Length: 146
Ligand code: V0V
Ligand code: CO
Image (tube, rainbow, N blue to C red; front, side):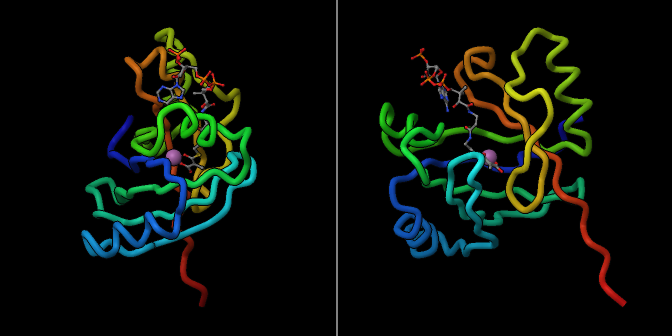
């Protein structure tokens, strides 16, 4: 079951400048940042709010790390802007299988590694009324060490 907006993915040319815009304009701080080589992105997660399912909603700012990446290709064509939306679920495997059964193309056979150790997959934008849609299961919260 999809229980939150996990994040909105925003493609940008210059991550540092875009992070600074969100900080200076709205006061949002970087909660987490990482490079995901498989996806070809450098990203910053700005936490917006906690959600009632125990997760949270973020803005995900994305800068491409290589010209053949999905985000670089999209920026070439469209310029900066909203690239994808991501719904959070406790079970990305089950939700992806259920959505695939409805005839929507799921891009990955198995979920791949996403931000902060999450497991992610994508639905083809042409099957989703023009919206690239991601499904996310967050990494389990690590129990504190004793
Ligand atoms: C492409 N299209 C889009 C789109 N990207 N439509 C809406 N939103 C987007 N973001 C349209 C495009 O305009 C074309 O329409 C058509 O789809 C085919 O696009 P293309 O430019 O030829 O590109 P493809 O087919 O090579 O690749 C498109 C897909 C690709 C969606 C298959 O971008 C992909 O695999 N995306 C999933 C991975 C990803 O986006 N990773 C970056 C975020 P017309 O012109 O034919 O009408 S990584 C992330 O979110 C992480 C790590 C995380 O959350 O943790
Ligand atoms: Co994303």
